[in-house]
Image 1 (spheres, helix red, strand yellow):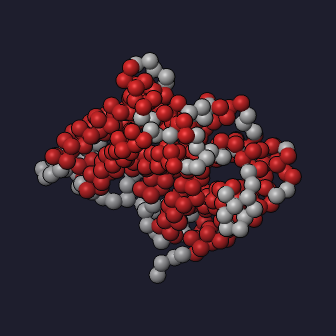
Image 2: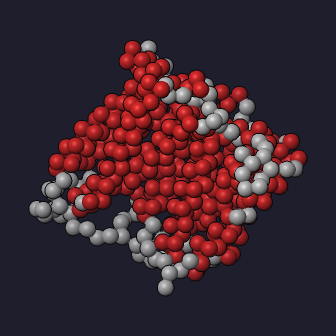
Length: 370
């Protein structure tokens, strides 16, 4: 029989984030910016201790190939609570669900979240990541391997944090960053630990490796697609660096002006693709051409998640009512820009499908003919 104890407990405990948001935003604690940081860290520590007592680690023991209730489990429980606070903050921002409309938290806490980018990040965290936490907790409580769900989540949230932190410290919001920004450390350290934990952990599934593939025609298409994607990432990345290269200048000004928005969140996202995406896609081409690259599956899961999350948040800028029309996608270029960004997500997730369609091609070991 399926075990839902951890899922139900975590869901109920996460709801405590709503009254906390109401209290913080309707009291005078925000008058001193340091107060929010203290309340934030204290609340997170309290949630972890409470969840630990409600669903103790001895309830699900760690076994070979299984996780057990450990760092990953309690990280997901804590982050579910954080996801609910994100939803509550954005709901209050727009006066939804009967919450009093206000922006005090954004004015005194994390001002960069009161932007289309911030709305996208918090919305993704409050909906998509919340569902991923439920899936991970359920898998652990039912002795199923949460490896790929955990890596997928880590890929999305670390991509998000890269854009949040680099954008906040390099853009127009860098002139005023209150102490509460330090709370982002938690959302970098634990996902990074989870990611490297699974990279260093052998897979639970035992697969017989092969040295040939029946998907070679798809691989050729993927290689061509990854090269095209890398080309666009380079052009956009150079644009974020304010390159005078004519093609870059033309593309940024006539297709994606959000890259030059003063908040720097658009620029940070395309720089992520330029700095990390391009090299990884070139390595992925190598992995498609050579069997036994056992790093491929995990890293492709991580990368595909980041591409989906980052592109959705990035593209949403044009349609958010609070965004500056000056940086919207021009109507004359709308369909082309949408097509380019959809293609970038499509090619990364097609690569993900390819890895899981024939995982034995990406496994090290004694080879046999397919």
